[in-house]
Image (cartoon, rainbow over all chains, first blue to last red; front, side, top):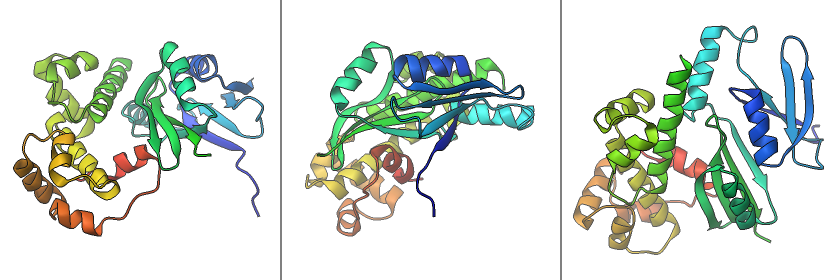
Length: 136
Length: 129
């Protein structure tokens, strides 16, 4: 049977801007950045955990028609594409302050929940991200 | 869809996020229009074109959703909850709640089950039509 999730994917509208945000601001690491000719295979991971990567995929031809890619872009910018990532942290409030200082767009401040402290933000394109400090 | 239209969507989403955060305050169209980079006169129409409902309706459902959350997961009184989510009178709250949810706040509270998933999913999926 399965024993891990190794690759997940979200759509981004600009891979350089995505790199700047996910690596430059959120502090993830580039796990792979390879030009395959037909696409740029760009993945990031939590530092020290290359076994689990997120593919930052740009929608476009020939994987989908330009018309479909436009629809995907529209959905991403409306926050309706369904790209969701949830990270964990040892210090939700400290991470929130550090990312806020870097200009990250938060949707929710750190809040106590039954499962821990967490908060919400969006990437530059409209995808939703959360990070949680699990209740110990 | 042009880049300009994508940028407008993204800004409208930012304005909608602001409504999700500040749902207890009166709807501030000029402020939201500034976030969205559209004129106050065009904000409602532009918002509706993107999200399929007016900002007023979106906010009303968000307030009811937050009230449902507090009824489920807190012991606060119905009156207290009405004011906490932005209604200006308990009577308006109860009437609006019943119109949208189909039962009174008290009846809803009796039957509701807590939702143990991250809050953003709860907010997205339990905001009533």
